[in-house]
Length: 242
Image (tube, rainbow, N blue to C red; front, side, top):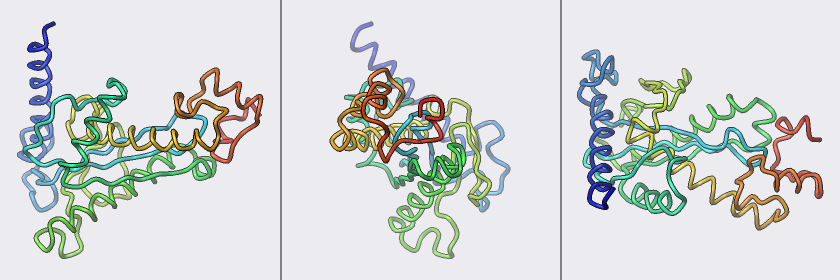
């Protein structure tokens, strides 16, 4: 495939993902609009939410909520796992500079051990949505959400729903590959967590956190056997090791 063909394919995928999200703004997506604009159907401000770090043995689970402008035109946004670190970093910078709002939520290993990874993930997502909504309110001023209601009109989750969030929402299987907003959230969450794990590597250099990001690699297990666990390890994930 030539460079021109690759670029054309990326632009085609960008158009498809933008159209997917635009359907929730215009009512074009299947089952996305009931005609009640005030309650979030045919929504104006679409937020994508995704998380990273549900499977590692150490470190937090991190969620991101991203609200992109209608004219966001950066190709290459996709499921963060499909992208190289260099590409993720470049896209992260584009998303952070051009998004209308970005919120980050975290649940550390202690929370994960206490309430389990699913509930911890939901807590991180709720924190991310609240932060993004607050940022969007500040950006919009008195135009939106001045009555205390959410500025975000509709949330697109990657295979998740959270009833405690009082904003219309849609759960999308493999959403990070279908939705531009969820893909952007996937990248922001991944880069944020990867950077955090790289910092933890400086504190705990015996586990390979800079490369494995806390996942259960051979080097990681060898580090545990040699040095024991760290304060960021998830004990509930290590019951068969400790």
